[in-house]
Length: 267
Length: 345
Ligand SMILES: Nc1ncnc2c1ncn2[C@@H]1O[C@H](COP(=O)(O)OP(=O)(O)OP(=O)(O)O)[C@@H](O)[C@H]1O
Ligand SMILES: [Mg+2]
Image 1 (cartoon, rainbow over the protein chains, first blue to last red):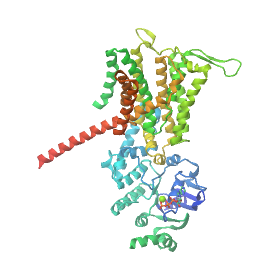
Image 2: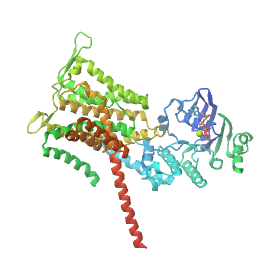
Image 3: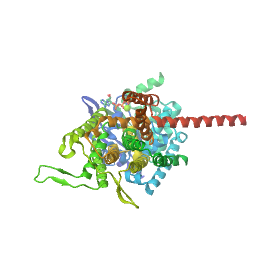
């Protein structure tokens, strides 16, 4: 009980008054929200609301015009993207992003980079420690592939996978990096309903492994089913924040966003 | 098992075959081709594995050649002080290692630069780098003798139990030495690209954003690759300089970089065997053609051969052969499966 209170007090991620301007265009006006440890938090909003931009800021791919991003108290805005990943903040990309020319197995093995220590000299001398490390990592790759259900494709070139499999592989690569906080940018985009269903399961199982998840997703059924908390972004501002039931009933949200969804659902 | 032994059988064949033939001209061709293959292997590390096109790669070769030559000959340098800086002749192997080191140092600088200027700009910067080096070699006459060239460079030496230290004047020894250095370079590249470091390099080639998103410090690994590639090219330059025993500014000519790029691309960039296959093919071809055709026809045939390979095997010879074998194995497995089905039915 007290544990739950503690984690509620200290969020794993805190976005504080982040602003992003692109030469005149205001992509994010001022955005503040927090992600409690161990939860699935969804960031939703219409196209162009600034969700991907927010991800880029959190993971160091973009320096914000103002504001701070605190991960367990460390300000991420000063760090390079690979350092941020090194802390355990790992993202996936809205557009499918894989190492197309490598095998599925090597994709995940490459994703595990930060879990290895072998450097140039160790590799050249084939030190025993390096060989042991490689063995360990290969075993974990097999485990991750089984987890997302891609074991049977391990030796296939990633570029040859079907679209849905490539989306899964994107997540497997990110899992290889041993995330503490995983940011998923529209993981279910372009998937059919049964694939989306399977994806929901995967995301929930990742959370059950103790990984906190920040999710951007347009599929409202997925968002409302698996989220512990939802943050709604519109025109670069946060217009609502709360548990799914509350968000669903919020008139501003319905106006800005869900209205479209309802229309789509009916039409 | 066989695939593990095959490279060593090839090395054994290369070590024994030409010596057995005993033809001095063939040895000369193979030695200079071998030196270029080392250069091509080092270029492949950058072009094939990290995906960075450096069209100034010959600069590292030339820097290695000049540094090793100067260190082994000794030189004095008027730095504007009262006394000129004088360095006596150094042992050849010290000079050779010095060449590798200095080339590696320039590799470090170029690697750092590669992340500030990308794509076409990087290509231009690297070409200019080689051109500037050529200008320096031409005009810093006090140090390099300019177009008069550095002459009488001592050959590399080796210690043999029955002879003591002997300088390597003989073609046979030089050939074996080049082969040995090539094997070492091959092993270094093989171990590197099959390791965590190599996967980071390939990740940079395949998808830089994704690489960064999983925590790969792409800048750092690119610099590591450039330093190693430059050092190897420097070693090739050192072998060249102590073999030919004369070095002039033409060693920095653009055409040599082009030759290495051709070797890598036709053989198969991003494969271990590619530069060797492409290097042997396009290193020996001109010599074969020289026997049978007039000079202008030689170059036309050379060009056509290159275009044919690139056009029909865009991935290069090695991947094409690999795919063919894989396809055949699959077809064989397929027919076997078909047979089994028939018998079970
Ligand atoms: N690099 C950039 N330069 C200029 N403008 C940009 C850049 N990146 C994003 N934008 C703009 O910023 C705004 C927010 O874009 P963003 O990609 O963050 O939206 P999003 O919420 O992810 O939308 P979607 O649901 O379509 O993915 C858009 O108006 C977009 O055009
Ligand atoms: Mg987006």
